[in-house]
Image (cartoon, each protein chain N blue to C red):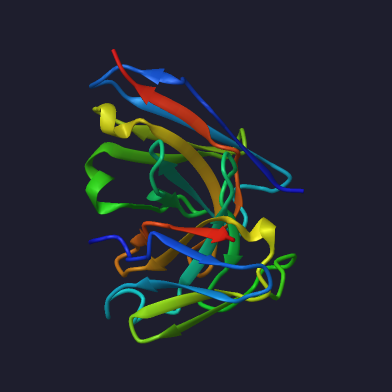
Length: 110
Length: 118
């Protein structure tokens, strides 16, 4: 199966909101509520930001939120801060015990 | 505090087998969670390799399934990855991670770079 589709880049000014999309199909994102989002700073391991579409792990700022509509999941970062500049990846369960990653989105804080 | 640490050779010859170990501290590997391997080629995105359930059941990414084996060593509280018949395309930073319900990875190792070259 193909990877999930994410925009290569996104940007916003400090204090603004930005939304990153993650598009799959009716067999993965559209069917299961097992979408996760990860933040990765250069040279660092990924960090879980959102699980099960919209659940925020302990310690993740509430500026980060997740949602899903049809075959597209979204990560919204509100009140952008300089430290939010990073790569963001989505994943989705895809049946038969398979997991798909998105290609990643580079978020730039202007 | 749960920590994961990858280890293994940093250089593997083409056609040989890549072998990595992930040592888990602060948590029993036989308890509730699952354990996974993810890789990231230089300058590229993340790719799921496979997952092992705490009971030992394994799940692999279909394109890699014929070459991958993930196993658990309960006596050492660690799990391992073997990737056979490697090529330059398998050159990547390899991460191990803890996976919970919902197929999310909440704790990651720091990653270990493996280069496939003669």
